[in-house]
Length: 272
Ligand SMILES: [Zn+2]
Image 1 (cartoon, rainbow, N blue to C red):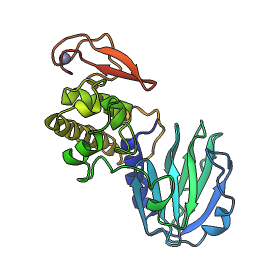
Image 2 (tube, rainbow, N blue to C red):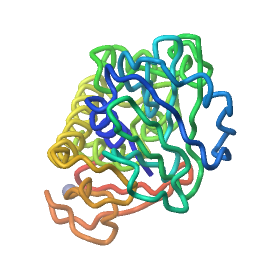
Image 3 (cartoon, rainbow, N blue to C red):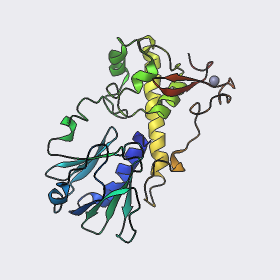
Image 4 (cartoon, protein in one colour):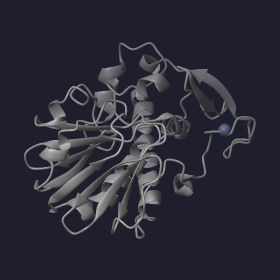
């Protein structure tokens, strides 16, 4: 599933191809994504100038001057940049956005959980986005903020940092890895984690996400992104997916438990 780093890389990847361009047309082949793609995009979009591209949580926001396209990649969505329409669309290529210099942005999504939404209100006030917590890489996501947010929460720290209303975009891999780096057991009650440990946790979340974005960014020269299964985000994990293997730090056997239907991995010695 595309996580925040993949979405950020996708945003960075399409940005130079779209910013400042005028939309020529959108070709819609299949409207049935998570919500139906509005047919009216065929008449609304032509002639609109793309002012900027932004990301909020796992949404890509394309400012089309009179409104915004909101793109979500769902479980298996990806955007690719094509330089001409020579390449015939494949089965799961649901829409193409054509801009003035013949560039085409093509959306592929085998599982069809993605979304393409048009809004004329500021996307930060959109119902999908307005309730979200801060971005993990913003300064607003800091120790005092998290302490205040968690002081009344007795559920596990892992479920809390994966809760979009606490902080957006910390998926399962990054939650597992960050908790390891901070030395916190995933099952620890959120309101029992000390401020110094929260500080370490926040630093670990930021570092893990930044590293993943950099790893993806280094593959951008030949921008041809990104199917959710590509290998280039595969990194050396400390605990994620390593049940039964030995800890890279202390050689204790890594354990796995299920929390909120997601697998959690931890080192019983390094994480308390
Ligand atoms: Zn260990």
